[in-house]
Image 1 (spheres, rainbow, N blue to C red):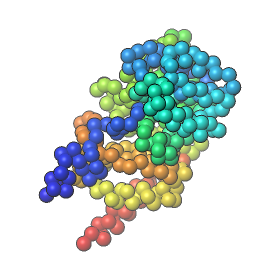
Image 2 (tube, rainbow, N blue to C red; image 1 turned 180 degrees about the horizontal axis):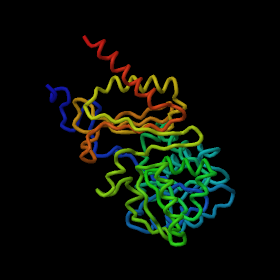
Image 3 (cartoon, helix red, strand yellow; image 1 turned 135 degrees about the vertical axis):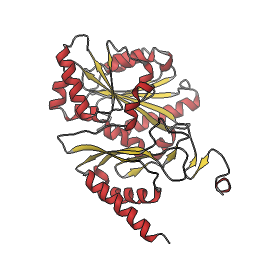
Amino acid sequence: MLHQIFPSPEAGPFGRRVKRERGARIPVTIVTGFLGAGKTTLVRRFLATPEGRNTAVIVNEFGSTGIDDALVRASTDETVLLGNGCICCNTRSDLQVALRKLLMDRERGLVPMFERVLIETSGLADPGPILQTFATDRALGGEFHLEVVLTVVDAVNGGENLEWSAEARKQAILADRLVLSKTDIADDTQIENLQRRLHELNPHAAIDEAVDGALDPKHLVDAVADADERRARGSFVAEAEHSDGIGSFVIEEHEPMAFEPFARAMETLIAMRGSDLLRVKGFLDIEGCRGPVLVHFVQHLAHPPVELAAWPDANRASRVVFITRDVSERAVRDLLKATRAIAITETP
């Protein structure tokens, strides 16, 4: 009987069901965007709102003098500057140290009991390795949960930046939410062309506008804040085409599936092409589970699967977004098909 195997009504094959992926972990918001996009202005406005209270801020600047750090520090007592480099390059270890220090200082009462961490990256940062940091450091992964990746795009210069800068494109591709800044000084053609390009790179991410940093603060604490943005829930980050071989596709299935063949397929994929799996994340409709099972992979590392208490919307289909480097959708589909065929063959 099911209740004998899982005695708690909140338990399932993957352990305790949770309302949200993060559980009791501290949520992390990453605000990224190219140089001059308006990240700091947006962060300062957010920290002044009720939703921004009790937020610890980590500011990364490219250079030895922290200008953005000084601006943000006036808004919160819990600011850490990572200077003279990018988080994605030589200061990734500094990010890990800063996060651990925040935890220790909070426990010792040296900083207030913050409830959220916001990381403002430098304008030249690639968010990919930052996402990997939370996956590779198991201790940090046990304490922090990456909630929102928000990318600010300059409506005046953003289109040109996307054309020549791989970093700007990666920032757009990996975003859960895109925010256009400076729309008050851009002309309609610039805005329309930029929105079209961003939609090509990331068609399922919500696109908002923020003039002088004014943005609904809920957008920084929840990737999808209301029912009108259900379209963005279909994938965590969307399909994209990238000139450096980075692309994305979504695998979607409408019938409940067995978890074991999927897990074995991912193990094989990680073993053979792990370095090219930039981010794989999605919901699975697993046989015997009441809610969706959330899966998340970053390169060679896999987060433990988590069963949520309920589906986020009416769409109960399994959908997994793959952001890869030169890994074809056909190859992944064939691998999944093969593992299922073997599993069926080996079933007594």
